[in-house]
Length: 115
Image 1: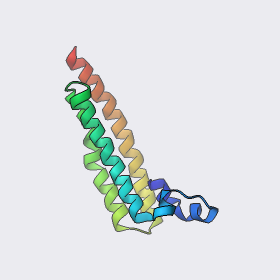
Image 2: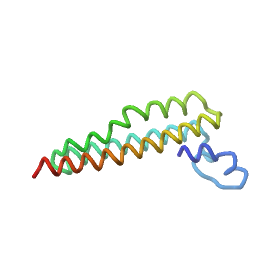
Image 3: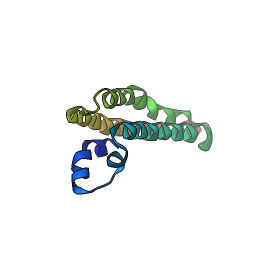
Image 4: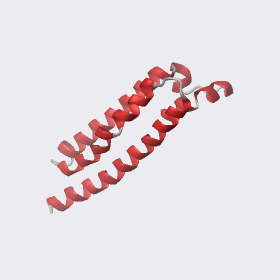
């Protein structure tokens, strides 16, 4: 979603009709936030319901608590500043990198604690 915001003008000029081109920047940033929150809910369900109380998996949400508010603040406050969007995209990559590492660690801990 952030990539679509960054590429909106180029996509529009070449006839590519992504979400950001169709709906604009403001709705796209809220869709981005919604997708991220759904991912967090999935992790909570996975940890507490599907994996039979595997609470260590919840450590994967730490980056969301720290980085996601910063990303969303940048997207919200600077609606038409490409450099700010690029910084937000960089933070988004870090968010998912940290999430992936902590998710793997959490799953490993959950398996270890159950054995």
